[in-house]
Image 1 (cartoon, rainbow, N blue to C red):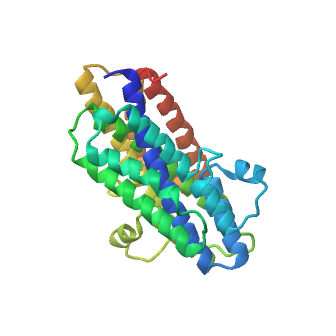
Image 2: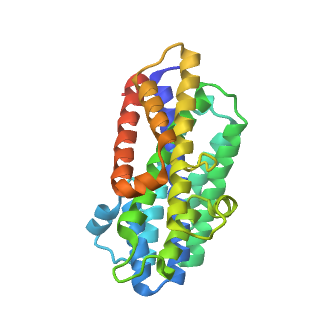
Image 3: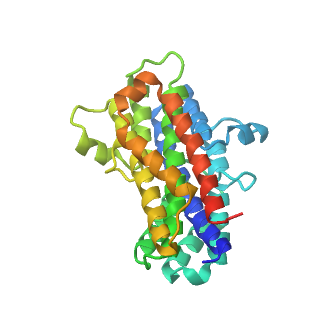
Length: 311
């Protein structure tokens, strides 16, 4: 496979995953905002900007910190790379570059997601916002379903690899923002606002039902952290995305007959994550642990680019 084709497939996976994540984050934040006081609602939207690393461009846009302004900024503002619209535009560009490698259903899902924004952004009250993100999620689910029905070859493996790298970054940032900066000043740890925010985290990663299955003692922050760090049963956990990264790289190595630095780096991370204990991480510093994971994931992304000659 040509390196530029591999790069387009990898970035297609990353951008589709990112668009889906931002859609879920906006949806969960809208629901939290509706239930919150004014100040708690502002903090929820501020945290959404922090998770997506779009706080600085939002401030530069000189808009008020309101539900409609932040939602529009994260959904349809083409001026920055963190919006759903920009993610889907980049996904579509990469999909067009490798159109012959994709099934008709996969291409239609990517194109359909991009076309959502033609006529839906005239207003963004809560119901309209939820309608837009629901439509985006439906198309990204359609892409995921189409991907499952495609041949298990280099095409699907590079897409899966991009998705796994992106998912690691998203989950680590989501958990880090909640644990490190999200609880408003004066609010009690374990109070109503705190519980609502942890529930928002679970909603963003589609893990509300999974949490109830795996933990019987009600909502506890330490259990949410454990779920997102260590439980491989949850597809968006750091453990699961780490395993998926290794799986995709191993399968690509078998097809190509060679391995490289990215394989070694991914397996080293997988071994360390498997030994990680949530209680130890919380005691030693969850913020530091997650920041290290984000930095390491960026290095792995660079190693993948070098190994497969993306640049």
